[in-house]
Length: 159
Image 1 (cartoon, rainbow, N blue to C red):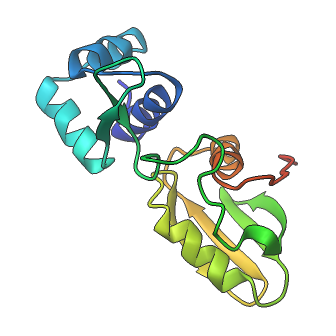
Image 2 (image 1 turned 60 degrees about the vertical axis):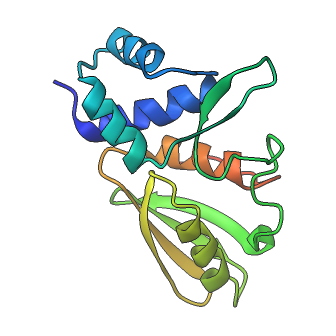
């Protein structure tokens, strides 16, 4: 049986990758991926993830994740302080982000305010941020989130 964390990550991915307009459609896609749930469980998951609906260019409405409303694709955070990013590495399931001196606090603040499911929290020093991912979130998923949300960032997942 797949756990809640896996289900929430799958819901986020489906909503990010597709135009989904009904809970029935989302339940069917989740069932195709091995998840079995009631409509009430899905409603609670959508509320937990703070999923909303927005008008679709083809008519009707589609589900959207927090922070996507009214923004151009690929331009999620143009005003956030990510110019101080230096590197990212992983240890013990957590990410360590190196920044220019004095930038860690503002970048960590921005990461926390994304309210992204993948990030449980951050701890910042002067030039280093410890990013604690939620249980079940892989380094690749965290890198994908950062690449989606930070324009022009280049991260190579090293082992």
